[in-house]
Length: 126
Image 1 (cartoon, rainbow, N blue to C red):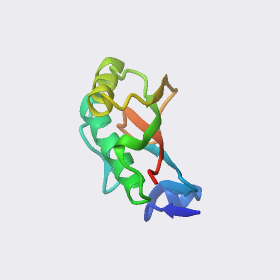
Image 2 (tube, helix red, strand yellow; image 1 turned 90 degrees about the vertical axis):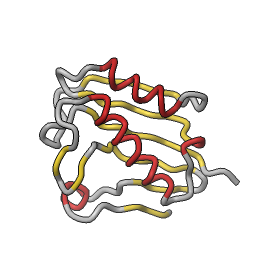
Image 3 (cartoon, rainbow, N blue to C red; image 1 turned 135 degrees about the vertical axis):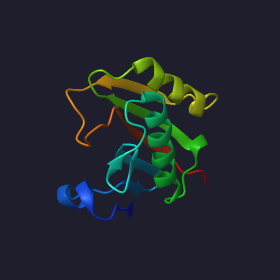
């Protein structure tokens, strides 16, 4: 198994990996629009979603997957998040790829100010 780990922060505290490759499958943990421990684009569900997807795809790419190989996504939304803006961002990135998707409102997200977290699963081509 191969892993991508975040340095510092919640990943170390909770003992989890940003992404894991097992065989030809890649799983990426819930990813928020964080930079240096601070949430980006406060109050903007669309931009947070775009950034979270970008970061999740980048983690998968470190393990050999590409955006075209994404087969499932999960979008977790904090209370008050504009779900339409989050799914609009998802649709723009994944148009033509059309992975399986579940979108949920949750009680809260751990990073302060986070409106959106994105999980994804991908397969590695050949």
